[in-house]
Image 1 (cartoon, rainbow, N blue to C red):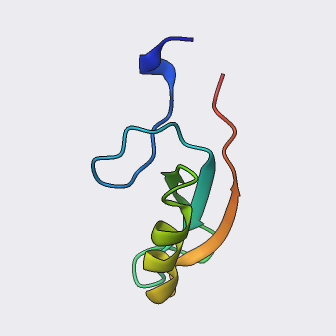
Image 2: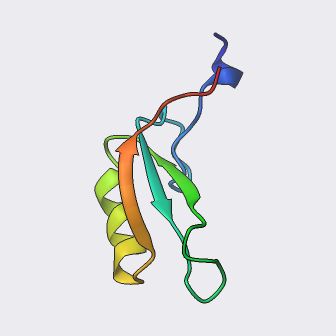
Length: 68
């Protein structure tokens, strides 16, 4: 696996490998079953979850399972 194959955290400027998937949707734009994904490292899991949660968008947080 090369560095280019590593999924990175979605936090602005973060280059850490993702360890969490934050599953969310915006009910004004998406159907209830639709899930968008932000990736998070351990350091940004809480802040990204709080950002989505404050808007009522956060649906679930699960361990990241890299594709492939």
